[in-house]
Amino acid sequence: MPTLSEADSKALLARHGVPVPAEALAASPAESAVAAARIGFPVVAKLCGAGLAHKTERGLVRLNLRDEAAVADAAAALLAAATPDDGDVGVLVGPMVSGLRELIAGLVRDPQFGPCVMLGVGGVLTEALGDVVFRLVPLTRADAAEMIDDLGTQGLLGPLRGEPAVDRERLVDVLVGLAAVAAAEPGIRSIDLNPLIVSAGTPVAVDALVETA
Image 1 (cartoon, one colour):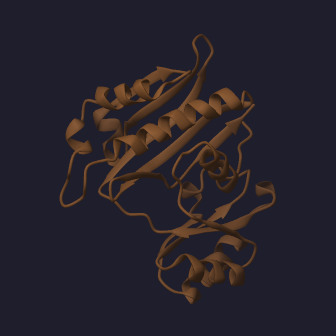
Image 2 (image 1 turned 30 degrees about the vertical axis):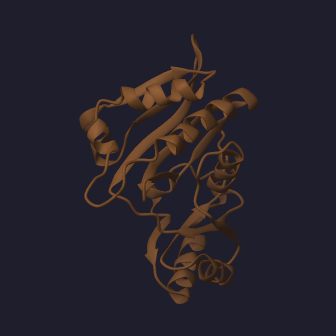
């Protein structure tokens, strides 16, 4: 299935109000180091291209890079790992986003019901809890708020170990943003935001994969 690059996926989502990190796409190790210095350390570097749907499985993500030399070395290794099948690639440099809680969200087009927005508990608890809810598009803000209320693991959404409660209005922004993409872009088959890290209460899509028809 064709996919957008992570950079293009996030740009699309940001246009519809989904919070994403401030990132930069670099063409070389030197450009990557400059971008990292501008963003602020520590950073994450990923090989980025339209043909790269599963970067983690291929070892194409470098985390917690703390200076320009480390970023340049990581970028060189990432670019060297690209294959001809990957097509045009670059290095996506972004801030390390941290938080105790991870959610997942996405969009699917069901053959019978049409586009549906999904929200669930993510991270290591995804399969163990199976705490996931769906709603059909169109989706109002009230519908999105109900999706959040319908999650069974409400304790994860409140204050947790010194972190503030999840900002439900920002999470509503994510869900209605996904619905807006579905309405505006009929050629998009699915969207996967995994993980959606809750950082200082705000859900941030640190990875995004958009599949097209």
